[in-house]
Image (cartoon, rainbow, N blue to C red):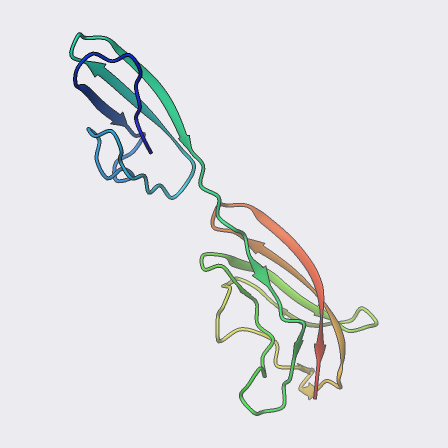
Length: 161
């Protein structure tokens, strides 16, 4: 961020005001570094040697990508590589509900209440204690992003043997 003035007389003093502490590298300099976690408004006050002053507002917009994905295929064959169908995504995202359906619409897997990238959660390709045959399965995923927004995603994955 840069505080710039025009027609100032002599040295100019800058004072940045933030709605909460810890987001600016300095409060009394022309070029602080802002590191907010969320979109924020800063107020800049400037005064020159003659006492001429002014204020301005600067909004820093923080865009955080929302990301939750399910692989398009997995191979539950016991080789410890890609054996579990997991929900991946941006850390801080919570899985509210993860469901998988076979081609006839029967629910074959359901889980929820866990963070994305959880190594201990996911579908192992079994239904009612039996390994499923290779096929395409439809998934529905509801997640809660760290900004508080909820999103429902849909897709398909292929069980490969």
